[in-house]
Amino acid sequence: MDSKLLDKFLKYVKVDTQSSDDSKSFPSTDKQFDLAELLVEELKTQGLKDAEVDKNCYVTATLKSNTVNKDIPAVGFIAHLDTAPNAPGKNVKPQIYQNYKGDLITFPENPDITLSPEDTPYLKKCVGDTIVTADGTTLLGGDDKAGIAIIMTAVEYLINHPEISHGDIKVCFTPDEEIGQGTEHFDIDKFNTDFAYTVDGHMPGKINKETFSADMITIKIKGKDIHPGEAKNVMVNSIRIASDIIAELPKNVAPETTEGYEPYIHPFEINGTVELTKIKILLRSFKLEDLELFKAKIEKSVNCVHKNYPSSEINIEVKHQYKNMFEYLKERPEALDILWKSVKETGITPEWKPVRGGTDGSRLSEKGLPTPNIFAGCENSHSLKEYASLNAMENGVKTLVNIAQNCCKD
Ligand SMILES: [Zn+2]
Image (cartoon, rainbow, N blue to C red; front, side, top):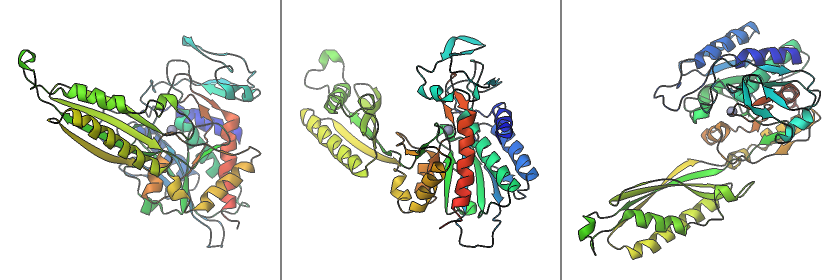
């Protein structure tokens, strides 16, 4: 299994699929079709006759059920085609370290960076493993080519082992995940599965059923400008009002002071003149109730500050961003139970890890497709120091094969 898995992975990372924040088109870059078309060909060669890429660059295919039992849930496996815009993604030259000794890894084209087991704790567990990095000038793109290689290898494995019973298995490779658009044109009705799993990020055992719930608040403050020489009792400076509001926000509920399950309030953008200042604030928590409390708290602070500047106008706007996917996943506990069991059967200890952000899974779950996330065997994503572990990816393949089997069992 492992040589095929590695070959696929190396082939996919060499295709440049970087998405772009600046683009107005969908997908954001045409080159994502290069990998999409290559995958359609491979899926067809494997015998998945309905494999296709649509005009929005979503690759879909079905591995048909091989059992007469009709009561098996249809399950989806999802990974993303694009790589992050944070670091170069073209001309990726994978460096392969077989039988890794646990020593310092250097990058042939960039003497300024190294990968050491000291500051990358998982590397310590990789002695004897095969490690893949880029050459120091690009990201590797294991996020999420590792997820794609894992899914493609699992599908091939199931085809070559017809003695393993499974229901309908659908695969989908999506564009533009890294710029937050991955589910934009995802056709859930056409995909038609009972639940799905994204295969993206992290090292073995780490699985995700919880993400933040997220709102964004925009506060617009209108002041009054006049020549400063004649401003007494007339000028209302919206910049001062904004700073008074920010000063009221709790300092110990911030991204820079919290971790794990702790929530935060994060003023992340401020623009202003005397006449008009806008503040943007992110609210993040695993509990929906916290978001309500935060909104009430900010409103109270704003009202309090407003009293000192009665002739200003202050307006608060709240935008819902996404919801903790557990709010939906708890309605489909079998999707979580099957995942837990399937990881355990590979011999790894599973661990639910809360995601301090949103994922495609949280957006798909909200749209009606319950979608927890499975590790893909990569770390240091979005950076030149990204690396993949072949052993971790193999465990990803085993997990997917186990899921296919466990969906058939009661
Ligand atoms: Zn990813």
